Image (tube, rainbow, N blue to C red; front, top):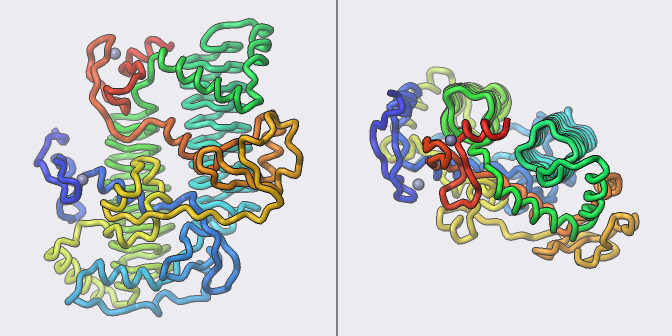
Length: 560
Ligand SMILES: [Zn+2]
Ligand SMILES: [Zn+2]
């Protein structure tokens, strides 16, 4: 069997033992790389650290002086250009070209190049965005604000990983939803609030794992139901009366309901994994995939392993963000959009092929150790070579890197410009400052810009309901209940809260984001025994968890 363990390796970073299977070995041989010496989790963490999707800093474009926002704070030695400037011919990446020095390690020289070549200000699909300046890792959006990892969205605010939605506030991982608030991993829902893992539900709140429900509150595992509260069937009149009593238009009412719903959810069987339409695959939040293993938040994968946040990829291993027709990707992060045969690359976007150890390149092929290339071929350290020169020099560098142990390793963490806590790594592997630093990662200290406002108000002093909130709130800064960090409400957001009769949130958008991430199950698969039929199954819920977790078969039998 291909999953037979070929050998055990000891991780050079954390010391844990990890397996290399016959299947893994065949892949490494096929693409000509040495066996990994770092365990899958440490490799995963390192790649995640290459993507700062939603922490945006105000700064200026280093070429034009225009004000921009950027995932890069102001303390980097490389210049940062506004996206449209970076893509223009106002600068020349080949002018940074240099010879490779065989007396020094590769990573040291790559770090020097990385620190001088201009970086793109934000990662947006310029030309497809309308009135959506404060966004990152986004394309095809209209009237959006503070959204990240998003495409084809309209009127969406403070949300991440949202695709084809309209009018969302504070949502994560949603597809084709409309008018939703605090929704997590929902698909095709309309007017749904504080809900997770639900599909095609409408006019409901506090749902978990429901499909096709309407006018339901605090329900779990329901299908095509109407007028239910805590899974109890009510008449329309009873439902309306009880809904009124829940005071879901106040912070206190919402808080109490969150607690009651979470307590109730612990009494219902939990789906072991959130996977749909897969063939011979493992992972979580995995959809429409085939022969893909240990993949998370992915869709349309074939013959993949250890992928996360990837859509549409084939034959790829150790690949994180974002796919979109990618094939033969190995140890790549934040690369995608028609990518073929990329190894050890970061942030290489759109139409790249045959790149190794490159960062921030686009439309390029057959390049090694380059930064910021646009439509180039046969370059090494941003210097142009003939095809023959390129092949022979690349071969020599790989030989040197193999000898000194660099070849086969992803870029060391000190070459990453982001603080660990600013990146999507925190969503899967939350670490403290000390833990992150001990693994060699940088850490960003929170420095909020002091907002230029008329008034600062602690969130506890906000009026209870939205009716009492004056328009003037748009000129105030609110202090987060938990962190005292100031945050502001934008006009469209206020209109949304008013329309939905929701109170103004008391927490900073970052805290709201973290809270949603915590409600999603993790990226570790535990072997568990089903309490019903004694069968072994995989779940992201470890045995120490208080949820009732059944195998998928038993779960479905109970639900349908
Ligand atoms: Zn390790
Ligand atoms: Zn079972």
